[in-house]
Length: 118
Image 1 (tube, helix red, strand yellow):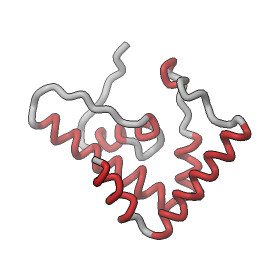
Image 2 (cartoon, one colour; image 1 turned 180 degrees about the vertical axis):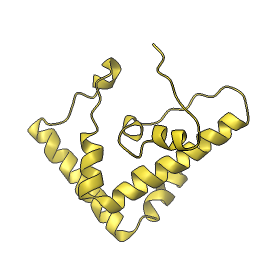
Image 3 (cartoon, one colour; image 1 turned 60 degrees about the vertical axis):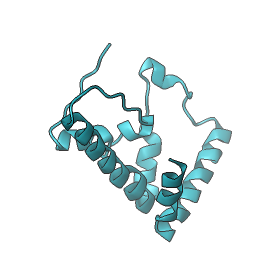
Image 4 (cartoon, one colour; image 1 turned 45 degrees about the horizontal axis):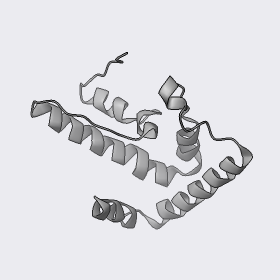
């Protein structure tokens, strides 16, 4: 919910908040330089973890909050849904499926594997 999002950002450390602003400014600089991949490349299976890797190295506090902790939380939520039975549709942003701390990696840590469907 909107309340959850506000809570998430307000609970970040000051360092993570500063790094979030820095990351956004880097994003706008990249956009001006034409360095961002096409927003629709994912449709054709072309993804890049360049931004995630840069966050991991350049903004480590933000990376921990937004990629490691958040993805672990999501993996636990997905695991709970699956253990309850039934069929679920889970939608996450592309960046949360990329990098060494992706939701997919955390699901694998919980013994849940995924498969590509064509």
